[in-house]
Length: 83
Length: 155
Image (cartoon, rainbow over all chains, first blue to last red; front, top):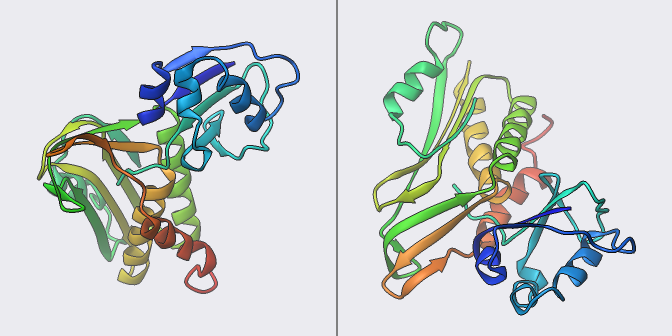
């Protein structure tokens, strides 16, 4: 599974992207966040305030109950501020 | 048409191209977004716009498609820059062409409102107090939401 981080999540995690193999019981965005947050202090800091984190699965906005699969591209970022 | 680019753009040339060779377009409405030197009372000396390549183009195309579904548009243009920008620089151009002004005006406002809450861009400002990621505004969410709740009637 390919994970992307943008804006301050990238800074906190210390990575723009990483490829991970979560255990089979990680089937949703929420489960993935719980699992990723345990990978490092930086990950934990990035996911400390989930109200400030948005997610996309395969480039579509997704909520924490959305499904994730091994071949998915999952991105985490703050609320968007373009325009 | 959607374009995401680092380079600046020529507003006059972009708007002229939109109606080039067309005699059925009665009006073009446009919005040009610029970098300000002040945000929430703090001086801004530069800005870096980060985006999510792939998803950005996808979301902008979806927003364009939604506008075309809601209004009778002859042409749509969204040009959004990324990378390093300075105060006064152009960030984004949205333009809509239609036979009549109301559809063009409404659709242009819709494009900007939705783009601000759905296109994956993030602004990092260099300010008097150091670098800071711009926070999303509740007023932008409200502006985008109004097109969901009250889609200007029956369209």
